[in-house]
Length: 146
Image (tube, rainbow, N blue to C red; front, top):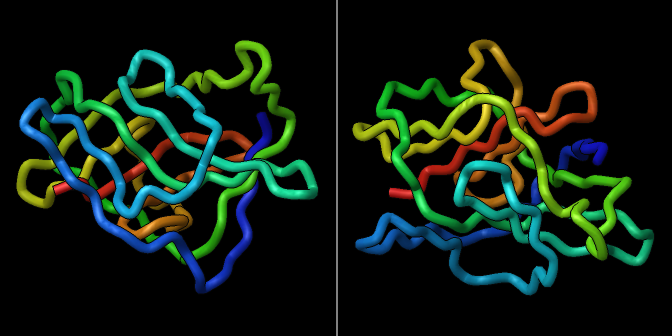
């Protein structure tokens, strides 16, 4: 899959609900009938396909399974949309392999899935939900879930 961003002021608005089993979901739950599964993390990205056959990231949901507790530096970000191409939801193409880990900052309530990097630029595509895209690859996702 190839990812790219477009800057714009409008993003998906809402907040995260966290449950006692450490699962979380974004509300309101926008209509997003497709799911991208992040390897080895129990987290999914809900998305939709537009009339131009481009995928759009909408929201995150999942379970925080044994995250490494650490300080997370939130990247600089701008608001916009994250789109992707070269997908196939009919086969195993809905799985995304992210390198890195699963991190949680107890003081701020932010999580990071993927690589923790300094001095990076991100795009906020939903309230308190950031994506880091580099060379058309998804590098990391950040979300303030608590």
